[in-house]
Structures are given as C-alpha cells and as structure tokens.
Image 1: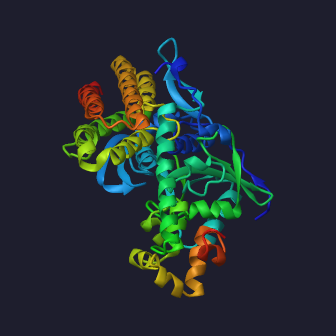
Image 2 (image 1 turned 120 degrees about the horizontal axis):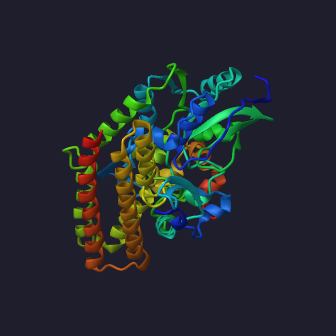
Image 3 (image 1 turned 90 degrees about the vertical axis):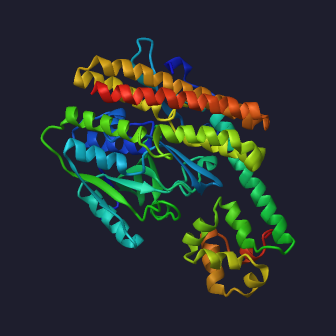
Amino acid sequence: MKKDEVPQDESNLASANIKDMVYAVDENGDYTTELSTGWTPKTIALDNAIQIIEERIADAKKRVLENKTSPIEYYMEVHKMDLQILASYVGFWKWRVKRHFKPFVFKKLNKKKLQKYADVFEITIDQLKNIDG
Amino acid sequence: MADNLKIDFSHKQAAHCENGVVSNLMRHNGFEISEPMVFGIGSGLLFSYLPFIKVNFAPVFTYRVMPGLIFNRFAKRVGMKIKREKFSNPKTAKERLDRNLKNNNPVGLQVGVYQLTYFPEEYRFHFNAHNMVVYGKENGKYLISDPVMSDVTTLTEKELEKVRFAKGAFAPKGHIYYPTKFPEKLELETAIVKGIKQTCKDMTAPVPIVGVRAIKLVAKNIRKWPKKIGTKKANHYLGQIVRMQEEIGTGGGGFRYIYGAFLQEAAKVLNNPALFELSKEMTLIGDQWRDFAVDASRIYKNRSGQADGYNKIADQLEAIANKEEAFYKKLKKAV
C-alpha cells in the first residue's frame, strides 16, 4: 500500500478523536507511517457485528417479556457478554448462570446473588429485576 | 505514595499495542528500537484459524502470535530480561504498580478493552489482550501511554482496576511487565535472523490450523459456509475475518505491512539486499489481503448469498496462501 492510498474513510474512530497508525510505502519505496481516519470494509464489519448484538438484545428482551428467560440474559447481551464471560465476572459456574436464566429460579434468587449480577452490570437490583426500569 | 508523580516518558503512537509498548519501553531505557523491529524479532507474524473456539459468536482467526509472546521472544533474542507479575488481589496489584512508579519505573500492563473508557463504544469488546504503559500518577489519576492513541491519556484508580481485572478469555489478572536487565549492546543481527527463521517455520508448519495451511483451510471452509451454516452466519464469519485482520492500526494488510517495514529495516541492518526485495513482495501480499477484505465486505454489505461470491473470495485466499508459501521459502533461504 502506498502512503497516498492509506484509507481516509469515515468511521467511529472520529467520535473518540482516534486515528489509526498504518505502515505504508512512500514515493521512494521506503516504509513510513501514516494516520488513517478509518477504512470502510472494517467499518462495515464492525457495524455488522454490532447489529448482531443488537438483534440478540432485542430477542432476549422479547423473551424476558414473554417470561421465557430472566433479565440476566438480557443484561448479558447488553454488555456484549456470553455465558463464559458473564460466569467469570460473577464467579459462578456456567451451568449456575444458565440456571439463573430460568424465570422461576431468578425470582427465588437471594439478595446477595442478585447484587453480584447488579454489580457486574453496574445497575441496581431494581433495575435488574425490571428491564424497563 | 505521593499523589503527584510523573516519570519522564516519551509517548510514541504505534500501529499495534504490544509492539508499541515494547518499543516505547525500550526507548525509555535508552535503546531506539522501532515498532516493526520489535514485531519482526519477536516473530509476531502468524496466521491461525481456530474453528472450534468462538469469540463474538464466530470462529477465531488471528494474524499474529499470542499476546505476550512478541515481547518474550524479543527479549530472549536481544539478550535482555523481563519481569512479569500477575495478581489475584487488586489491592496488591495496585500497590505493586505504585511502587514501580515510585521507583521511577514505567511498566507495561495487559488490560481488557471492554471497560476502557477512552475507546469508542463500538470498539469495546471483551478483548483482554490490549497493552499500555503507566508512567505516573497525578491528582489521583494514572498517566497512561496507550500506543494506539496519538497522545497520552489518564484513567482513574477505579477505571484502571477494572481494565486490569477484566474477566473472560486471556483475563489479564493485573498483569504488569517491564525490562529488568539489558546487555551492553543489543545483538540485533543474530536476533533478526532468529526472528525471521521462526516466522518462516511457523508459517509453513505442517499443522492444518497454523500458517499457510490454515489460510487454505479457511478458503476451503468459506466455500462450504453458505450451504452449511446459512448466509447470515457465513457473512458474520467473513466479517470476523476482516475485523481480526484489522485490529486497530494494521491498515488492511493485516500485520503484513508491519512485517514489510521490518524486512526493509532488517535489510539495512544485515546489509542484505535480498530482504529489501522480499519486503516489496510482502507489501504486495499485504495489498492482496486488502483486496480480499474489500471483496469480502462487499458480500456482507449487500447480504448477498450467491455462492460464486464466496467462491471468488475463497480463490483469492488460496492465491494469497500460495504466494505466502513461496514467500516464506524464499525468506528462509535469504537469511
């Protein structure tokens, strides 16, 4: 890639005032660095990944409202987590977290366990119990 | 410790975090070593495909070696020592960091990206192998030199603790590292040769999920994906290939351009013109990776599911694999 071919596409990097540093060759064929504002193929890939997460959040929300899963699963998706990551944050085994997804198990959880989840998601227990709250 | 403590540390932006931290720490200790040099000597270049491990609901593709390995190999090859520490207790981790700062020793840190407040929201995934340097503390805030940022920044004690104790795969566990012992003169020549040889060996390894063979395996799988897992998932997987290729700052050619820059610098140090020519070849391979990403992104942008689209990019990948295979064979002979 030549230095003047370094992509200067629009991306979300600008929102945080970040520019990518990229290695490219100058007119003499020598390697040098150039800053890039972003690159469309990557932005699209990122947007797609985020869209998938949003779909997962919407789906989890729907299932919470239908009483098919507990708000824990919804908040897990909101935080871009999977079972493995959530389990390591709360310090429970994966199968236990999965069990807490069951609405009737969730309703019986004691305050201590609820607090653990609330802390990880940085919300109150009330917010944890009520996803629209 | 006193509340205000600032080590004289010069921050320089880099394309990739681990190389950048090492390069900046080296400069702080009086050794001017470029980012590509760190990457090349540390044999950072790789390709690996782990279809059985899923991250963000897609298989793992990586274009570089495991976190930490670049610095370890670099240190060993140039004859210096590094110290690494991990902690189970955040309090001890903080004390150890503070003590190092007090001793005028800036340290490298492994951190998670998800809670990294100065990153754009869209970039904050549960990725735990980011690297930065902490070089002081002012008004209760840690002074941070993050190599992918153009300038230095700060994090509060709480914010830093969160990223140091992020959870999930590769959990950093407060990991800090810093060089402890340097040779009088860095033996760059032998280190470069060792680094290159290792990369050639890794990339041509007789293992299906590593190196050139892994690129071929991905190509083969891409052809099957639309039928086997459906268009939607296939496109998500393609997106993952491009996203991993494009970790912050690698310019579309994955890490290939950084390696090209390394070969060019190595050609001068070793006075070996063959490496200069190989650097040009690596640049072209980087360009091919870029073209691949552009074409792959067209598929997932249009959400088109035509099989010939997938076949076309699979052909592209195979061509890249063949080029790389020939390349590493030549490179091995050149040193």
